Image (cartoon, rainbow, N blue to C red):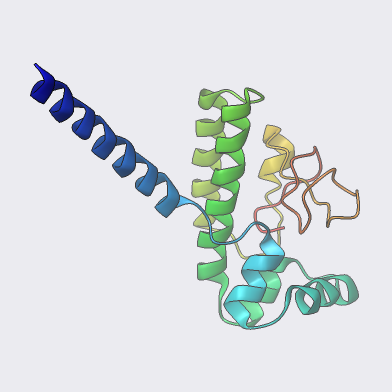
Length: 155
């Protein structure tokens, strides 16, 4: 009987490790759109943020200008999925609503040009925010705040 318990315990540990590694693999490398653009273009977050402030360009447009729009869209989508997963885990969003928002975000990716015109976060209550870490969206900075602000396809 002891051998059976060891086998079951070992199996449970392996399943837990496998599930954890899959979750960790899926997590975004970036926490904000500014970090994503910086990482993809070789610029610093400060440079990207300054460019956005001085030119009025969205992070998506900055990525597009650098030839990195597709990579940016992929990274930004994963960041938003991570935010939604955290909100579901915290109980502030249902999984069904998160799935609905993700479906809309994925559909928007096909036509997204980086200008941020879709405003999916705003229209669906995703709460990605438009803040830049200065309290403008109650967010975590760089446009992916958890507060209720304007949510654009590519902030």
